[in-house]
Image 1 (cartoon, one colour):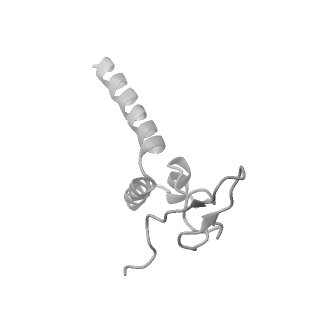
Image 2: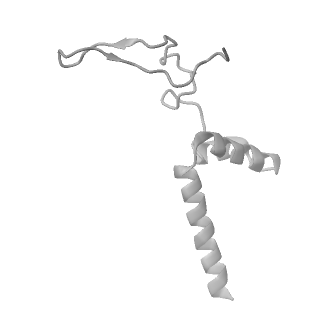
Amino acid sequence: MWQEIIVGIVVAAAALHAARKYLPAAWRQQIVFALSRRGLPQDKLARFFNTESSCGSGCGSCGGCGDSSAALAPPSDGGPARRVIKIYSSSNA
């Protein structure tokens, strides 16, 4: 019986680590919201699952991403400029 409890704890810890590290940000945010609705503190969950807004997360909060479509990047080694291909558009046109 104790072995099963210990194995369950190890499996739960491994699942939490995998969820924290490898799940997409949108899924981690949904986990945070689901757990916070059940009474757990949302700010601590957001820190644990790394869903807080930061400049590197692509959230747009820092304003560093810009919104120019298909901008030309300056050549770094004197070669030809590379064209940036925008995958997601901000409008539904």
